[in-house]
Length: 256
Image (cartoon, rainbow, N blue to C red; front, top):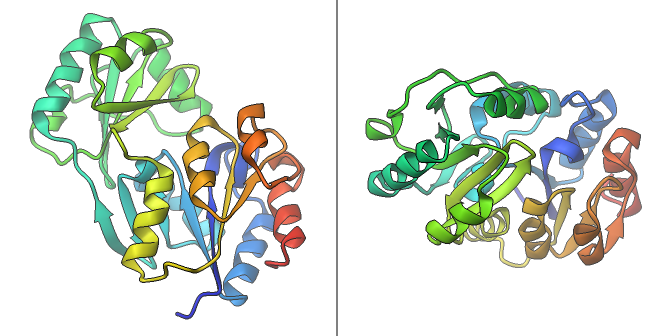
């Protein structure tokens, strides 16, 4: 399709409401974007299995998931970056030594090492299912992303595993991906794969892991509920996600 622009949307705190759902207003806005030849793309730390209902409600079939480790456009996989087993094993032993838990992600499934209070709180906070326990799932499955479940030890993990990026996505968890993997890199890969190097891009986000996303986009939009760090780099600060911020911004930039 001959797109005139691409719009990248974070989910929690951005495209979703307070109950992690797509409102009718946002659903209608996504349809209008597509009618205007703007490609809507979800850009999230979650994986595809967690957002099936969200994608359907939003009429979106393109996504950058697991913070850029996996990309699908118009239903077709175009990028998948895997973490090697030896690296995961090192993290696995360190996590258990610290009394934390670990989840393993690919685009189809999630497994975890155990059901701790932090793990349950993390998944409940984004209204996502608690994954099944399979402590060594990484030995027999491709893994794109890890999730560290715990409220402490971030400094330790960052110092011990410089080959990974740790994004604190809730008070109870950290998205963990290979160094250099982020939503912004996902934007660049998507544009390269689609051969659209000069197409205008719009990025929408609210959290720390959205800094790379906004930095990679031509027009940077922070939600009204975003942190000050993200707002400081934004071209436009819209209303909160619970106050119609997505629709407000899309109208502001004449995208719908």
